[in-house]
Length: 607
Ligand SMILES: *[C@@H]1O[C@H](CO)[C@@H](O)[C@H](O)[C@H]1NC(C)=O
Ligand SMILES: *[C@@H]1O[C@H](CO)[C@@H](O)[C@H](O)[C@H]1NC(C)=O
Ligand SMILES: *[C@@H]1O[C@H](CO)[C@@H](O)[C@H](O)[C@H]1NC(C)=O
Ligand SMILES: *[C@@H]1O[C@H](CO)[C@@H](O)[C@H](O)[C@H]1NC(C)=O
Ligand SMILES: *[C@@H]1O[C@H](CO)[C@@H](O)[C@H](O)[C@H]1NC(C)=O
Ligand SMILES: *[C@@H]1O[C@H](CO)[C@@H](O)[C@H](O)[C@H]1NC(C)=O
Ligand SMILES: *[C@@H]1O[C@H](CO)[C@@H](O)[C@H](O)[C@H]1NC(C)=O
Ligand SMILES: *[C@@H]1O[C@H](CO)[C@@H](O)[C@H](O)[C@H]1NC(C)=O
Ligand SMILES: *[C@@H]1O[C@H](CO)[C@@H](O)[C@H](O)[C@H]1NC(C)=O
Ligand SMILES: *[C@@H]1O[C@H](CO)[C@@H](O)[C@H](O)[C@H]1NC(C)=O
Ligand SMILES: [Zn+2]
Ligand SMILES: [Zn+2]
Image (tube, rainbow, N blue to C red; front, side, top):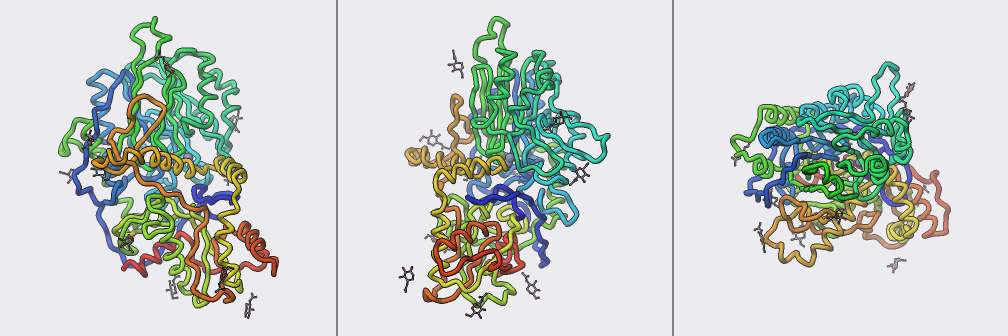
């Protein structure tokens, strides 16, 4: 099973591991990054600066060249990491002018998501190259994410090449790595430092109770971590503020354990929490002298938090003033807040990062061209089934074409079944490249088949699979999968809520552009640029090709993606009783893997 947990379907239990995708050899067309051509709307209002300010990134997952497609709402997230570096540099200057503190913080998941991180040639290590660019930004604190821990080689690479560049500011409070060389320096569990303005900080880097980590790494449950003696020692002395960074959603999960452990010792010290992992925009205040912020995913959001310290020591029981903002990362947003024009915005470091990333894209051949997508295909903005649905495209168009290539069974009618978690990101109109393939459909699963099933029986399998998940079974499945890092259901629930909540005033927001419309538990409006909500449509857990146009008694091939084998056999034995099917009846259908299907289809259908 070669998968990332984010591809898990319901009712599937297995251990995740990511394999390196196949290379394809064809002629090369180079496509330049598309700058948005439409005039971009500026943010709604200036950021509110305080005594202490934080720029926050999380779950960037390799999206360092930003979102490059011209379909909505991608231009909103079109800034690349060079633009972001220029932005941070200007904001640092503004902080100096205002004589306030500005910190840059990241909450983990640097790996797995685009060709820049995952499109490395054989022998490479995921995110090794992108990490070099991240170290060029002046991050004050970073925390480890679960995607740094699925494959030991990635963790080791971080440990050897990335962590040392952070000078003790890469924190891993409850995660250990075992290295063969016993002289390896331990990754710091916490750090204490002074800000530019001389304020003392105690910082942690906490990971949720993740269970999908690879050998030679260990994750200690948060509940145990807060009982460690090092933890008690670390928080004993009162700093000017606690900076609790971690790869853990701010509204669920175990932040209260860490918060309460600190509050038990320091009743009034400001606590700033910067979380991540569930890929949403979110904010909550655990008390009036603390704020928790989570800043989305895939460089679709850059977070902002600000706070004013007490004006005098008698105020110590009063609520502190906090603000938070979710910025859409694009040059218009950055220029607006940095007070720069397009011509004075770029710094030399920023430009060199952009050039370096573009060169990396060339080195990895990420512009390798498969075909031109005629329209957008999305995961949740079009109903399933429909011609705008990526799941419909994948199951009813791409798989039937791709799996038939060089296949002696291609003439035998079939039904092909896969899971809806098999796709990770939307496909947009325009060139479909190696980068798009790695981004949308990265999972290297095989396809298996059982021959000689009547069409009548084969057609019953998909609905039976989708009906098999009783509510309680679903809930316990999600609990289990959450431990292994699966968060797509939380992100989708957020989109669904946004769509439902804003459905009523969608008319009023008609003049706005599509994007995230955040409703969190903090005061005031969080979104920096106001949007009309993205439409959301749910989809079933399992999807399939169209039923073949044959009579009910025709013997056909029942084809399915490998990791649903156990459930499929169970269901097949429930919808018929003529034969008890076992693993012995299953064979490999084709050597072509799931991650190649969209590219092969694009070569045939989109040229
Ligand atoms: C966001 O994208 C929309 C298209 O949906 C575009 O019209 C708008 O100008 C963009 N806003 C910014 C700030 O990029
Ligand atoms: C795990 O650590 C042990 C002891 O250091 C070592 O022998 C083994 O090769 C390591 N495993 C991997 C996958 O690196
Ligand atoms: C990590 O290592 C430290 C000592 O280096 C040890 O005290 C701690 O129990 C380890 N944690 C886990 C989860 O293995
Ligand atoms: C202080 O903040 C807390 C938590 O946000 C809130 O419940 C409380 O009402 C606030 N108190 C005042 C006096 O504003
Ligand atoms: C803004 O600057 C970028 C990068 O230098 C350039 O590609 C773009 O054309 C400029 N846009 C405008 C509107 O001048
Ligand atoms: C998809 O459906 C829409 C609306 O029904 C239609 O306008 C469009 O032409 C269709 N696209 C394709 C590629 O069939
Ligand atoms: C199909 O077979 C041809 C001829 O052997 C080969 O060149 C091609 O790469 C194969 N296609 C795939 C997708 O395996
Ligand atoms: C499938 O049926 C065909 C003819 O109906 C037969 O030749 C073949 O052996 C069968 N295959 C299996 C695996 O039962
Ligand atoms: C959209 O309309 C509302 C009032 O209907 C107005 O307040 C807002 O400024 C408008 N936004 C844009 C981007 O024009
Ligand atoms: C095929 O089987 C289905 C399900 O058993 C049944 O509803 C349908 O009427 C059958 N079709 C024919 C043409 O017999
Ligand atoms: Zn993530
Ligand atoms: Zn994560």
